[in-house]
Image (cartoon, rainbow, N blue to C red):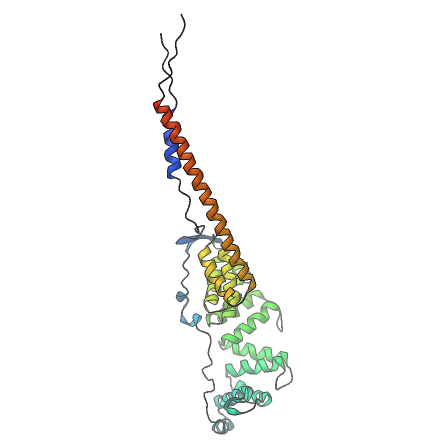
Length: 323
């Protein structure tokens, strides 16, 4: 009597062959960023779109602050007559003429401080801002940090974005006012909303650290991207580095990294140039590795095919039992 014939295990080999054939290596250059990215921070975890279109932040955030009363060639004599009659705007315009030597006149910071003082007393926030800068630096007047801080606070309270940035940085560093990250974030937000790229960058770093504001990685990166799009080189470099390395639950995006680091590198930033070289080297190594894996996969398929074919062509083993 013959026992059941024994055959090699063909079907498991065929299943393995199919599995190997279907395992294509992932597309080069793709790692963590897809249409959305999972972000976990102090507010919990959620999916956020990676295409952070900063136009949604509003045109004002994308436009640098401009002086509505900038000097445009007005007659200084006429301005002087108007200022003597109590016209605060004319006094402010005269301050610009004197500070910057406009209209072919020499620069006279002391005269500028006097005219700015008149306009500042009348509540002109740009005059308050400019006078604060003169007093802080001791240009045209005796250096007066206390009054400079008070004028900066007045202008910031009136919504002046550059004064708000200065006041926010003072609060962040504890210069002239007590260090208060929460107060700093409040003023930096006002400045960032007003288009000050330095404020947008700094506010982004606060959100990335959770300093004075909740820890919100996506919001921090969005503000930093806004500053980068506004042409601020430190933001371009920082955003490029974040996309190069990934950040917490956010993966890498080397295409974005190259874009932002390229802008910083184009301005001569040596570290950004070095990081671009690192990305290029890593991508070359990854391509070489994937080519080696693909070659091994072909060898594996060939080996499994040979094994399977041999199993099919080999006649079954027959066992005979002696009597």
